Length: 212
Image (tube, rainbow, N blue to C red; front, side):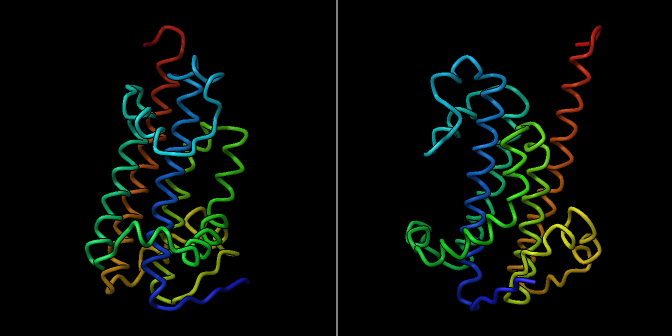
């Protein structure tokens, strides 16, 4: 197993970077989903990659349920970023310019999100349905990182929320307030996971002949 240990002073900065990356991923996937639906007419003009905050503005102006869902998810994670910022009196602009922390966070992020990233290349709907659970699983691992000051990303599928990590999550020690905040955020993501499944199920139902 690849277990990486971290200093206590790096835990919150790493967490905030990964929360920020998760926001960007929701925006990216939501944008790609919109290009298959509401924005399909402009797809040949804009391509599928985003490099700035333009995706949020585009999605915020759309009325389809998936785009509105993505905006809710982004706002939800942003609220928790603000919570951590206030709890620890952190300058986010300065933090996000720290290349060392950025590299540590990127290593964790790309391991934990690799499955969703691979899926997004071939099936954006499947990736959208999977994303809230992937994010919840990543935040679950951040909870464990807060407790043990280490990360074992080799086990993220077999011991995470995708498979059999539910019991460990249920009985996680949340006496540390940072863990407690992340624990609540995991539950928020799990609610969103159920919500996006229902959104797509209703879309399928309404697209059946004789319905809608």
